[in-house]
Structures are given as C-alpha cells and as structure tokens.
Image 1 (tube, helix red, strand yellow):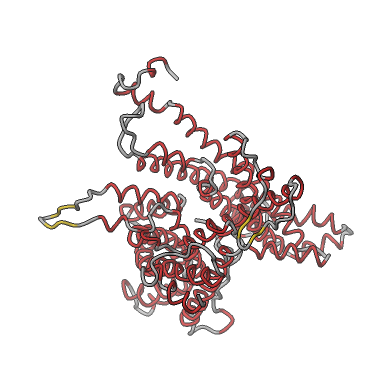
Image 2: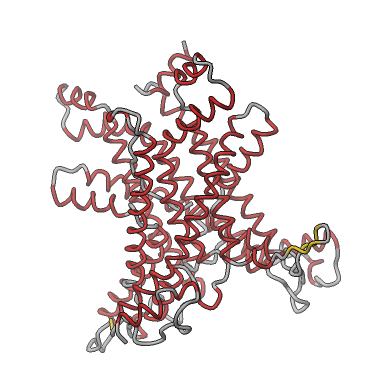
Length: 293
Length: 275
C-alpha cells in the first residue's frame, strides 16, 4: 500500500507494524467485518418480515394458513438451531441444483439420489465450476443469509405472536365497538401497541443474532473467524511478514469487537425501549408517567 | 452385518471401545443411528458436568453481583458481561489458542511439574469453556431471582430473629432457587444444545472419537446426503431435551412442594438459540 512497504524484510518497528497491518490480506480481513455487518443489515429486516408474516399467519382465520404459521413458529423449539444451519444450507444447495438439473441436464434417466448419494450433471452445478471465486463466495453468503433469515424469522414469529396475544383484549374490543374493521383494528390498535411487549424478546434476538454471526465460518464463507485463523497462524521466512503463532491476539481482537457490538446495542436498545414505553399501559410506562409528574 | 453386530461394534465407539475403523462404504441407517448415538455420550458428558460445576460458580457469582462492595461486584459483572456478550464459538477458539500456548513440558511450581497438555484436549478444554459460559448465564438468572425475592419474606424472617447467614441459607437461597428454576431449566436445555458447538471449536477429535455432530458430519460428507444424519441428531436432541425437562420438572416440583397448587412456579419452555 505504501512505498516503504515494498521491502518488508528491511523495515522494523512502527513502520513494520504499519505495513503489516495494511497488507493485502489484512485489508481483506477488515472487509470481512463489513461482511458481518452486511449479514446483520440484511438478515434483521428480512427475519422481521418473515416473523411478522408468520405471526399473522398463526393468528389467521383461514385454517391452512394458520397451520403453516403454527408449524413455522413451532419448528425451532427443542432442536439445536445449529442443526438447522447445517441442514438448511445443504438442503437449499441441493434443492437449487436439483431444479437446475431438471432444467438443463440432457440425461435424466439416472435418479438424482443413488442409494444415499446425491448426483447432478456437471452443467447443473450451482455456481458453475468455471465461475470466479467471488461468485462462489457470494453464493455461499447468499445461502447463509437465507438460512439465517428463515431460522431467525421463526424466532421472531414466536416473539411477535406472543406480543400480539399480550395486547389487552379489551382494547381490541373497544376498537371494534367503535366500528373499526378487522384490518383497521390490526393496523391502528394491535400493531402500534404490540411493539412494547415484543421489544424485550426482539432485543434478546438481536443480541443472539450478533453472537450467531461467527456461524458464517461454518457455512464456508470467508468471514472474520476465517481470516483471524489465516492471518494469525505461524508465518515462516517464506512470507513477507514472518511471525510466530499470533492467533490468540487475533481472537482477542474478535472478542473485543463482539463485546463492543453488544455494549453499543445495549445502549441503543435501552433508548428505544424507553421511547416505546411512553404512554403505554405497562409497568414501565406507568413509572415514566410518575417520574414526569 | 446385522444391526446387533453394528451396535456392539459402534455403540461405545466414541469413547474408544469397539471396532477401530469407522464404516467406509455401504452405510446403513442402523450404523448411522448407532454411531451418532454413541457420539451423544460426549454431548451428555459436556452438558452434565458443565451444568454441575457451573451451578456452584453461578451461585457465587450471583452473590458477588448483589454485594455492595465494588471490589467484589465489579469483577463478577465483568465476568458475566464477557461471557454473555461474546459468542461461545469465539470463546472456544480463544480458549484453545490460550491453552495451546502453555509450555508443552509443563509448568513448574515449587519444584512440582504440572503437565498442561491435557488441557488442550476436548474433554478438559471444551468442558472448562462450557463451565465458565454456563456459570455466567446462570449467574444472571440467579441474580435476577435474588432481586425478586418478596420483600415481605425477608422482613418476616428478620421479625422471627433469623438474620445473617441463617437467613440466607433458610430463606433467601431456597426462594432464589425456586424463582430461578424455570429459567434455569431453559438454560440447561440451552447448554445441552450448545455442546454441539464443541465439534467446531478447534479442539481436535482424536482417533475419530467425536460427539454426535462429528459423526453426523462424517456421514453427511461420505454420502452427500444430509437428510438422514442431521434429522437423527435432531431426534436424539429432542430425546435429550425431554429427559432434561423431566428431571428438572421433578426438582421444580420438589422446590415448590410447600406451596398451594395455584402459586407454584411452572416451567415454561422458551425457544432456544445460539449463544
């Protein structure tokens, strides 16, 4: 990056540290933090949408829709979620390849599942074997986002369903007595009040989503854990910047990153919580009303 | 090979008893069930021991957190923040790297040589991480329970002349345990599910003796078919969860035995997530 860094073996001290920390691999490492933040930025709203939809479906008057909603919210109970993460990614991957297989392969005489094994023809591979490494990364990142969104959507659905049940029933009946339609009651009374009940659960989920991001590593995306292991490992004299095993320090760095994220989220979410409690018929809202007098 | 032979060969494979080689070709459902079940021994080992040791540390931490003295309170708060604020996954990696850095020949203290190589093995290293982690999460639960003990109970105790340690032992601690138990049950289930992360933790599985996920992953890799091994893992974990619920439910009933039916605390399961 800098001119002095052209001969890394000749430099020492602070210059060495500066050159070391701005090497190409390290810039990739810094970008991988962006990957993690991007995952959070995409997953959180999609999971919210899925969860909201799931909770609405679970409350629906139409029986089949309600079953789907209930099944979706019940899906994540009792089974370790990491199993879903491993299962969904491979299932999605194979599902996409299978559909592609039906579309492009010429020889469909062979079954896809031979015994316990899975085969598709070479053209049906997604992404194609000739694709750039970036495409492979983007594809596995996409799969990871979908998996995170589906699993966290189910958790959000649970929280929002509970929050909708917690809104005092008398309020909904009052709204209907005033002649509001079902949709109006939902939009004007239920949803605005629901958030204060849903927020503790959603806060919890957000914290857990932050802590779930290292799972990207398990889904073979080159994320911060991957680079920390890669960069921290012992480098012999064959490398530009030889050093001993520094993985411990890299992981300490990651630990600090996560602790900072947690602390920052705590501060922001406490503010949102205070804001939402304003004027609500809950203990927190009552405490705020009394404090204001 | 009949299913019974498979069972005798592989039922204890994860702790090194039985056949030496894992099946290489012609995988049967029976093999998958047996080997994954055998790996579950490790999950139970990690979960049960971490929970047992963690319980005691969690009590100490919860007490430290309600202490007035900041020299006692602050370290406990930091401990809980660090272990609850960061992913277990990172904690595993960090612990492994730390333990590997210990001198291989052992540490000399007062002429005694303490070996440290055993700490880098999963059975000890991963257990220590899980123990500290569950202690932090449980401490938070116990701390919350300690703070929500009814004021009247404590005042009544003092009116009867029960003070100091006797008050703690006979009133505060049992009430704390009773109030915390439903959440603590969820924590226990949560912990058992987190033991699956040991597989990814960096602690190596020596001579193919791994946990349930290790074998499930082995089969999924060999057959390219995740639809059989992972549901088997899920099935085993549902059974494990049911066992935990039953056991903790019994303890809960015992803790609530003096109360009328309508004010007993009930265990309500909440969805469990990655830590």
